Image (cartoon, rainbow, N blue to C red; front, side, top):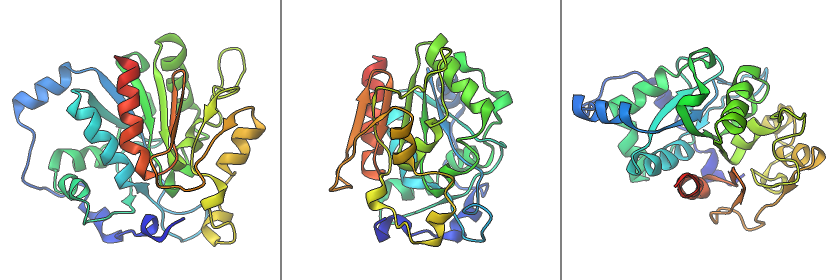
Length: 259
């Protein structure tokens, strides 16, 4: 991966749960409760596999999509395999949007108090968005409760499944009621092998290659060899983006499909 992606301020994980100044007003909270909802899926993983190498959810991939959805009046809930606080990283404080959300009390509290799958009702949501970062490779893909939520949303409620970068790992085990992989025969995207450092210790902890498993299971994996150019794929109700540069674009396409 490019070095900018790996810039992580570990200490910023301590900010989760700290109190800032811009609380959501009661009026804003009521408006959010009335809104149609999007479910963000994030990971509790703090380390790559069984190593002591820190990993986290990709903050930029969360906030750039979040901003697009909120501006379109969608409410956002967060779910993780275990619920509770999730690690954030890959933070670039020169990005004004990331800085804005680092000091947004309500938003950071949401990342401290993510919901458990048992607390989620699929019919409450219009779409799911799998966030990326190295943490997305662990805990989420194999979580059967999250799989059931997503497939109920997709099959019974005509919902949209979206993912960004390593977040595509979250869809690799999704199957329809006919025992067919959700992405089989569809154009799909995620972080490609071309940009992985396969000799690095972090990569050797990955349970699978996103690109290879998608192809093996019948998906038409498409990617940009240039990278960081907003590349994404939209095929029916499946929308996937390659890297952080596509996060907002994926969110905009989800909204277009919903409208």
